[in-house]
Length: 353
Image (cartoon, rainbow, N blue to C red; front, top):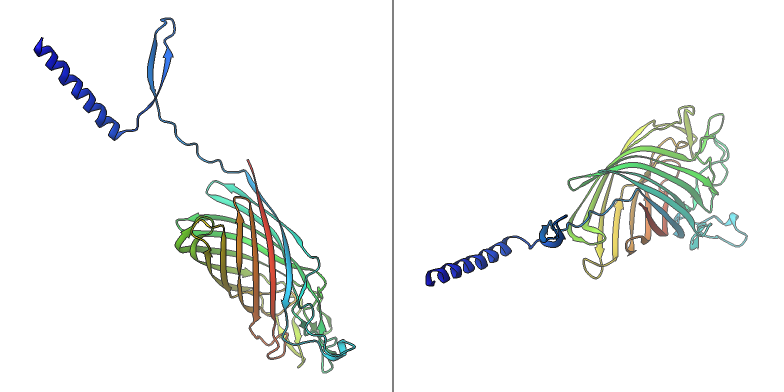
């Protein structure tokens, strides 16, 4: 009897110890009690642990928003007196909202496995003060023309993906002047007016990455995007454009390749989980309109803030400052574009499953 009790006690100790070891190595399985058909018996069986379902990707994400522009400043040179009845009236369009007060913007992202198909429709609204367009070519020129607003439509389509820590995108971009400034403001050509439109389009390849401390809503602290743009130029039917005021003819430069660098700093205010962040960005921007013989090159510095209401709504306020690099056309030295505007955009992302 003593030997039997000793054996049972040892078995109990081993069973308890074994259960303790097992519980330390694996999570306890869920169990359920079920009946064995036709026997009336009930047994307890182990179930596999439940795994969290993977979040479903939406079929499409629709972006709808508004964009408002406030002209803070434009060309450094004011209008001459003869444009106003009582002295100089200053650069056109300063300190006023662009009309219309707001534009409707929209776009979409379609997930395709590891890729995303993207489209965005937006606007470039600004005033650049004055445009140097003589009414005639040759030795006689009328005064500069002025405009209160450029209202340009932009469309962008791309295919994007992420490879390791690098975001890649290949796409197509266009900008077309719709209203208010001269749509055909590319100057004059020998024998008649340049009727080519103020429009541009290009193919591009972008590579971007971010480094540094991360945050919940804005990614890592420092970002850099490098973009290569191949810009077709369709002005071949016009041999050259007159350069004011010397009546010299500037030949068309043809198709160009431009390389753009855009460093960015985004700092969450209030910690890594904050939905509010300040940002600053520099880019060596450009325009190459069909009716211009040369590229316009700019230094652009933008800064402002993002405010998110996760997961769908983002408000961005940007103070954008653009300074043209003097190129000799179409402005006299050193009358180049210097514009400053305040841009307010509200984006609502609507996923559909």
